Length: 114
Image (cartoon, rainbow, N blue to C red; front, side, top):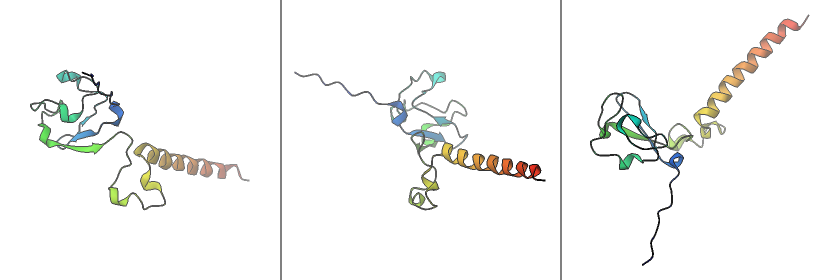
């Protein structure tokens, strides 16, 4: 008999789920310390009686929002928008606020013109 060991799953590659009632996001990489759920536990393997640690909503009230760093928006729209639709939320924030900071610096530089 040969024993097969399951390959360890990277918790960062597991889908996150958001509570539709309160917005809590269950992240498999963190688990749920309030209910003694260890890090790396996929949402599908949570006990049937598991509830949201914030508002006590049942598992049925959660929706899959994908992995961490997944581009936000509808899948069918990711090909539009000069490529910015494929950016992750963090990259979009950096682009937006970086552009605002640069515009502010240009505005301040106008005071140096005499």
